[in-house]
Length: 185
Ligand SMILES: [Zn+2]
Image (tube, rainbow, N blue to C red; front, side, top):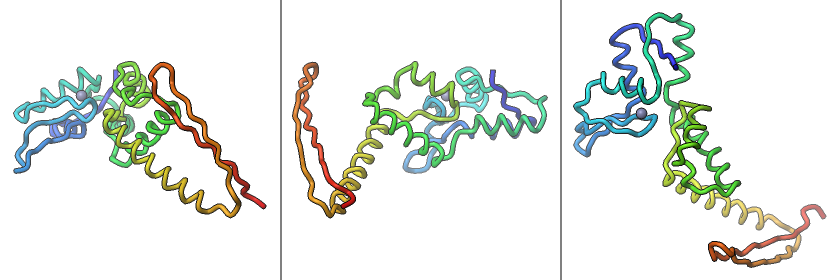
């Protein structure tokens, strides 16, 4: 069981908000509280005790008051959600893995995959497949731009070879383009 040290009551109440995001409407009125670890939403009227109970039950984060200060820092560090840039750094690596290994976007919603990631790093919040798809499209656009720039930088002639084939299972067609060129004359 994971341990999160909180000595004072006041501190305990505020630390719950490290794990929950307040969702407001256009008039800035609090609508609900969303768990940063699993995206579960709770009514705005929900007491912090309920939210804390969710953390304890769902994410095995326990509050105790009798461990040393050094341990407090360590456990707080481990279970505080990542900052936006830390989170996006891991997502970039996840997108790399998905694209290079031709994994389906829905892999991020698969229970065993979620369990694996959570056991490796409980602080990382796995994005939904729509976010993964958006990231892949951004990566595709960037890569296309880089390839254009690279091709434009050639001083030698290039040889293009194409190959087209159809997947017998999905009936989808693929066009492969191979470029041969000399970099150093
Ligand atoms: Zn949760």
